[in-house]
Length: 125
Image (cartoon, rainbow, N blue to C red; front, side, top):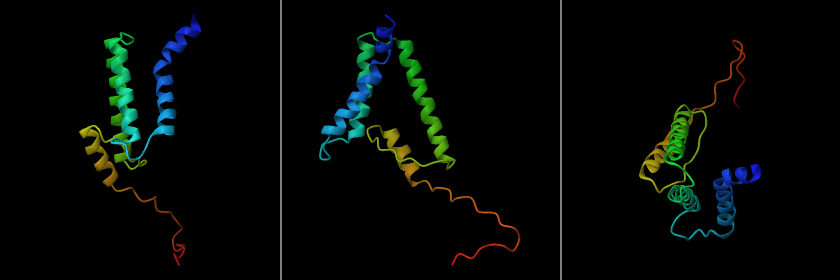
């Protein structure tokens, strides 16, 4: 029974992993949407289907949404601080496009200047 419950809990992850592997093998560059957009749609449709089939409750849907909202806010903050740089490829949602355009166009902070003792700055020749 424990194994069955664990497998049931991992259903979304297993389906998504299968989708990643299948799309890696079959996706063509000339298809109307990008592979990542297809995976995004697959994930959203899976969650909707789970909710419609009552595999997920409304409470679980709210928690999942808040988790992703929090993660997105953290990603935007970290990138705005220059901690790291990520190009966003998802282009289905207008809000995501706006965020993506701003993040890609944002300047990357130059590396911190090295500190040398007074008068010992090496030449850059």
